[in-house]
Length: 99
Image (cartoon, rainbow, N blue to C red; front, side):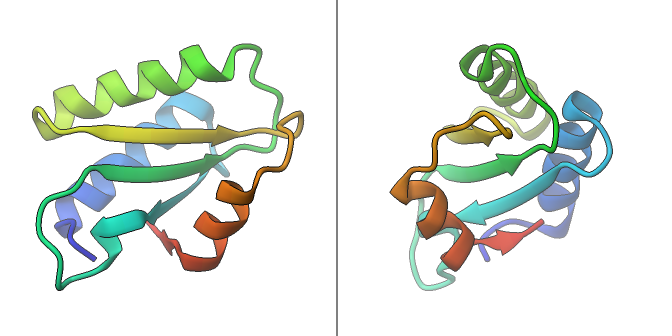
């Protein structure tokens, strides 16, 4: 995994502060491969409660993380109980690393 322990903790704590306790965060994509370089930070964030505007909430979290981590590209997929299952959700759960 190509995140420092401090970066992983910051991501997890910021997601929990934004969406509440029980928020699950998985890192997936190129950052899970230690042999690659660069790449954005791909996150699957799962919550147990309904989020009224998932896109806006994900954008707010990404902005908070960019402030905390520095200027990096961060892609967030936010999944709540009303989310329509998509293949990317399955792939992220199968390959992702919990933070």
